[in-house]
Image (cartoon, rainbow, N blue to C red; front, top):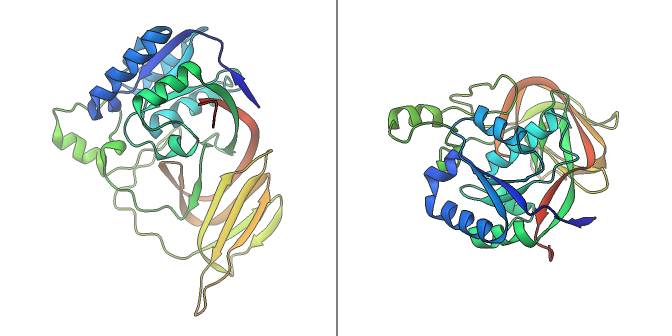
Length: 284
């Protein structure tokens, strides 16, 4: 169900990576938002300052200006403080934003800012794992290789230190309490995994698999696809829906949205129905 945003007071949190990536789009977003609502602009320089700004939003409606990592960071913070259900997020994508666009956020700064002002809140399902991590869009096992790009630039790295930026690009940032550095992650290959859906085994360790994907579906159900390793003729993917997915294996890594986590030997993801709200255009 969609509900129209009622607060005309906005807290605009501009991620530092967005300022470094495309300052012009940031300026345009600020101008459009300021012309249509009362805004308070925050320019955090670190994840800690980002968290403090979001935590001190008061009655203001938070607007994240940044890439997919910034959106996932905001959802994660609100989830871990158990404030996600009562706080609708808005976003103006600047930088890599394939996830945000897949959720319905307009690609351009002007269109996205107008959607913030004139759009409606849409409740979306969320995957939450047993370490309190969240997945907004898609989960993939094994993880794909990480490509260095502006969208993987770590928050708060000074633009005048290219050697430091290069070092960080070789590392994979995660949203877990203790991020794991994954320099030189090997290319993904066949894995032996047990995949359980609502307690029932879909595939066991004796069947190598090429990939497992999980996405939040609708009405509290996750869409699961398991691709068995093909020998000769292409194997038919296994597809199923359920509320809880458990994967067990030997030191596997997984990609949740734009982040790679692991290695782990067991992880369970559960669907939280209509757990969070994102402001989207009314015609979405």
